[in-house]
Image (cartoon, rainbow, N blue to C red; front, side, top):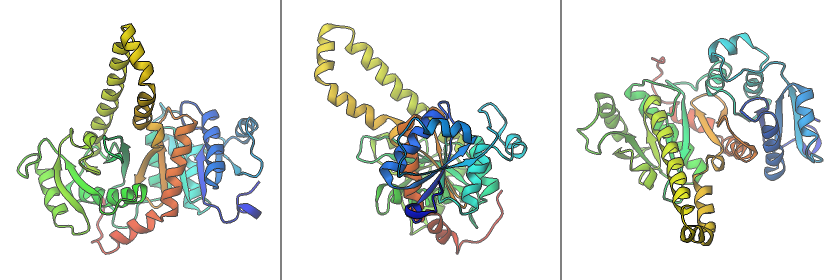
Length: 348
């Protein structure tokens, strides 16, 4: 079945690495089927045809725009990304990325090795003109109605001020599309909110962002600010961003575990937990990464969503939704336009 035939002709097409992630291919295929059905899109499942087809047979796919793109190799989580991408030209992640670079797909989703997905995107898609570095943008739950976006969370361990500025600009564009928020609040993660605090790097980035009229820059923000919904886009380098992300994930798990332990420690607690079950379920949903789908690799010339390695079908479905939203909003064209007048420079 081809997504370009008949009823599938004008659908948004998302390529999905069917072999990436802890629960591939079963959960990946399941999530892709749900996405094709619920979002009315076309999905290309990339992997060994016989394996993917076997999983598809578990689901009702009549009338769904789902096709299989052959790929004979798989990159394991423990392989070195750069070497594996070069060596395994027919791996599912490389073929998935190639579907986007060739124009056969409007976007892609991968739940395997984050490093492999990032390297494949850099090589196959390339960076947008005048963008110094690509970055990974990840949504984090907050006490407010919308999550915050942390950028970068691992693509660049070290950055300069110009790159942090661009992260803020790209993050603002992406946040606007995802959450329909005009002029989202952009802040730089720092150890204090005063202009004089922090390293020379963040102080220089502060000045650059302050001078940008296209940014709703609110200054420095602290680690306690974004969980409370005081900022929309949090800019930092990939080292600090990754630590902040995983610390937030760990604290959320700790609180859930402690709450469960205390509630189950006595009969009054158990009764209270039963009464408040609906509220607990809603909190669980708000803090579950599966609801946000995946992180977006921004700065490359194609929509690339990197899902959590432990993604279940719900997370995959929502990761595909993010890719669809980005593709339909033409986020790549918007980023290109933003940087089209920027002074061209080589990545440092």
